[in-house]
Image 1 (tube, rainbow, N blue to C red):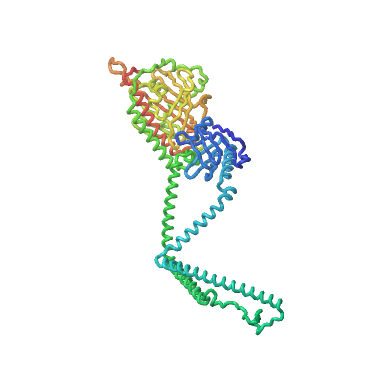
Image 2 (cartoon, helix red, strand yellow):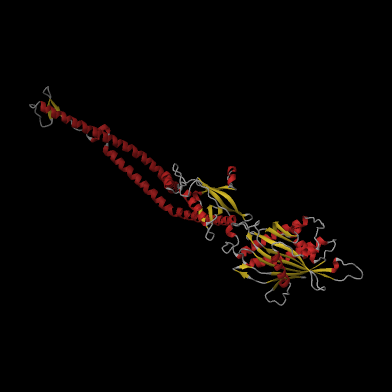
Length: 596
């Protein structure tokens, strides 16, 4: 996986004008789905949004998806040092960087954009704080008012009474205000008159005051001094009466308020009970909603990288086994439909002479091929009857399947060995159809695609093939050398042996990738043809021949999976493969000359 960051600055850089972080982009591996797994995508972090494109060159065509980081949750993976997840509600992106340093750079950049996104920052609080406070206060007031006053009929009557008392009280306040204004005017006039009398006394000192209550005017007549108006006669207002009425009005208001409080207290218990019931209903609905959301989230994420095979997989062993078995059943149904629709064309392939398969060859893997051939001839043909390490796991007619349990570093490496006897075909024909890639896709149902990487000789090729994915197991690929050989018997009474051995090699044109787990194999198909003499002068027919088959397989899956699952799958699939392949060979050889 490749990673290249092409931001216009580091993760600490911000735009000096806007104060926002600069754009940050690069290649990350994104989990697409359980079929295609991890795929390289061009990811861009800009304006508080994380977007991805198929490649940098396709940015002009628009992004394939985006996440707003305002409410995003960033989770570095617990075990994978290069992986981090970005989730918004039930939408989750699984991302992998090239190394832990790049992952840290991306995480810090995303956190920086979140901090300046307008949610939770200081500028955001200053911009939205007051409005939020007012809204909250208004909401609280509204809820309090509606819950407190929407009561029964008697409470509404008391409220109407309070409205009436309020109107009366307002009129009384206006009346009292007029009275107070009149009193203030009278006091002002009295003070003004006193000031004038004092000024007159200063100007006419001989003037005497009789009894302190009369003044002599210029005509010599007496004039009575003005005195403040009586409170009872100012503007015709009866202050005492108004005061009594005001007291009665306020008493009525207080009495009505007391009645309202009594009514609300009486209703409080019943309303509290109704509220408790509603709260209980709400709690049950919220629990059901959370449960449904958790199930939905589990289903939406089911098939994500956390549910893949591995010691830290979130899927347990039983669920893993059920998922694998269900996927294999689906593949079997699809294969049955394909076989029923497939029309096989019987054509005679150009088969090289037997001498070609007897030679060793001159390619660079000659010594390795000879070593594998000798090992299989020495050990694979040995009888397993007396070996206690081999366990018979399947016996169906002439076919027997044995297994020896082997584990290494927690990975199941069980060798398998199967023996079978097939009538009407020769060892040469069985090995030919097993080795020749022209017929591979006719009988092999587990392969997604394959290609010949290099042809070493007429009887040796290097093949790269990817197998169909069986979720939740990761997809596997295999790079192997396949060689077909004829081993001539040293004793004329013994039959010749035909052998196809496939073993893993390395090649520069088929390097491992992060899209598949590279498995290692060492497989051999070993066949011997037994001929029974025909009756009289009849020629040998297919009724007179029998092919004894020994099939051995040593497979390293290349990754962890539950041992019980691997052993169960092997027990199920190997017998099916052997029966399917031998039936195919019998079908292909019907009506054709015998190929010894």
